[in-house]
Image 1: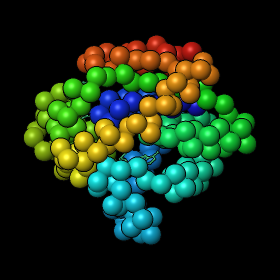
Image 2: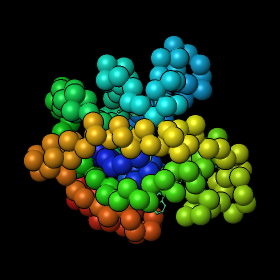
Image 3: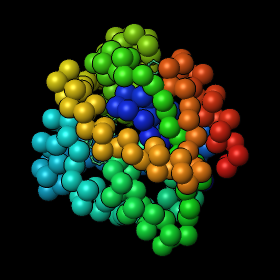
Image 4: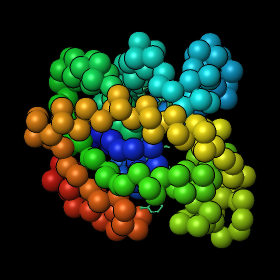
Length: 215
Ligand code: AP5
Ligand code: ZN
């Protein structure tokens, strides 16, 4: 099963991706996570992308496309994958089409997690992430049992550098590059819209119902 997740920053892509990955057993490929790991490890890629990530601007297509190209040839991606945060521009969508044609794996569904912009600032500024296992929490909507500590692994929770009010503004503004993808995939008949304003577990029930057809 080949699935793409799209939606505004904070729509709940990563939150649903964690659940989809464990329920359907397909690898979660998040360009945001890959870039954050690259920054943390301090290598060449990390240095190239750090300023884009911190400010909330999109990383140039050339860099992003190469990272995904290299990831999709990994062995685990041969059984299918869940792309989260890619593609994000029409150029990236075009490049992805080329890659998928080459490996003979068409897109089954593009899940569009639809939310209204007014909920996003509260979602993003309240988000906390486990440093060790990457699980996502929210101080109000999905709080850990003990403040600042991951339920799953006991790891420390941290706040992303681009979850400041200023960077969130830039990220929402940058979404203008991504919005045209909704029509692009709708016209191809693969877009499936999900109401992302519902509670997390209800959103996941809707996601499961859509993806059951491809499992
Ligand atoms: P990326 O990591 O992809 O960030 P994003 O798209 O801004 O998405 P987020 O991770 O912020 O939101 P999400 O939808 O996953 O929300 P989440 O589930 O965590 O990209 C980061 C940066 O990397 C970009 O700015 C760019 O610089 C670069 N980049 C990445 N990909 C790129 C690309 N393809 N091209 C160019 N540059 C790229 O939820 C948010 C919070 O809300 C959480 O706390 C969660 O607990 C809570 N929540 C989730 N669902 C609900 C719900 N239903 N109800 C209440 N709370 C909820
Ligand atoms: Zn953890």
